Length: 560
Image (cartoon, rainbow, N blue to C red; front, side, top):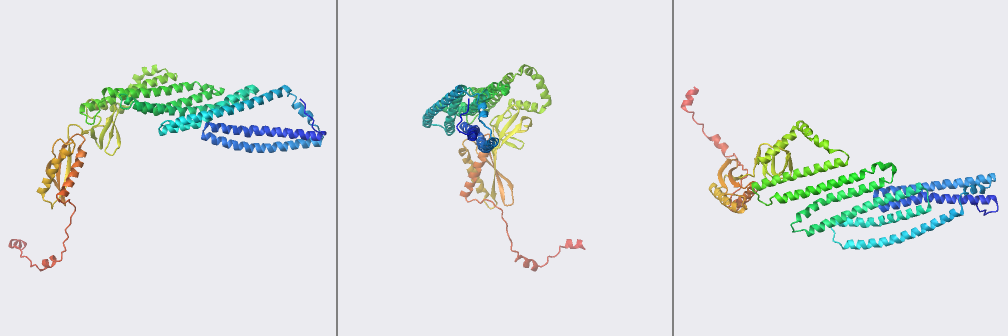
């Protein structure tokens, strides 16, 4: 192909050629740097990742600066080339003809057809994008009609925000694929553009899938739980509600691992890591399935053997304690089996591990005797019926209600809400307040100025009211034992009440309230520290004026 000569002189023709070359180079430069960085920024914006969006924005700004600097260099180089050609009086047309020798009319026709195809693809992209936008508007209206919980509403809003970006990236991926294959561009450029759009599309699709999974799973479980309310399956639906966060996190991890695996397969250098994706997905699925099995086994055991009720006898609480122990053992068994399956998936044969479990167990038992002691003591605590779930006990300085007993530890919740976790090997000298009966002891301080007989009569009247007001917590009328101690300004009268297990604090508070109300109603004085002050004036003169006493004769004789 030859360059058209548009000027009569060589100098003007050289100027036209250099100007055209500089213009094409500037257009190519800005298209490569600025347009590509702008497209990169828009693509990352469609994905919706803020961190990548900030990095793409910074890259776009640097691309603009680089394009401006390189444009200056290109213009200076063009001016220099034109100056050298004018100084040497050299015609540049033959050099340009040599550069364009490979360009033919057929090639230009193909380029024109490719440009026309790009225009058609762009028009199709715009039409499909508008249609998809209208569809998303309808879906958004439909979602707004649903009665969603706040957390489900948030996931629905995320899905609506991520939907347009995913659709645009999907249309762009197919449009660019068709265009690149039609234009027969270099394989490296085809791979780079296709991989870049595929990565953005996979990330965007993964984020959209996670939002939709959160929305649909939460809605389905919520609707099932609402339908199962007040039915025999209500507990199972509540268990599904407890498993919902674990299931959502597991599905989220599976989606992201799948996306990462698809992306890794696009890079030949990372193909080695691709097989690990399905393995990780299977491991996550196994542990989620184990969580489901553990939850439903726990529920079935509870429904079959557990006894519910506010006031349970010792046999029922003993049964509930063993139910908790069986649930704990079943949980460990399920996770042990899942662990063996995971080892098999990772390529590790679990048979030698199981064969050597006895030797390992013996070695561990000899090396960690404290654990063995805890386990043995826990077994004796359960089978000797020393403590049960719900017992109010005291172990040295720890006092409270037993929440859970396992073969190794015991959990005790004290009156202040603090949870004490004791090794069963440390459980010694147990004081159990929940067996048979216990005493609630109240010491009432009474002023010395009060009529003691009246005080005792008032206290006896209060004691007669306690069984009726204690709601069955007192088995008999409290007894007034008498004066327990005598202090500086008051005396303490002791009252004992035989109460039901674990009710001594409630009965003590009831007695204190009734005694204060009765003392106020009968005008009895509450004690407080008193002091008597003597002036001392009249006593000193009397002592000075008093005649000296005569010394006894016997004492006088002895002094002599």
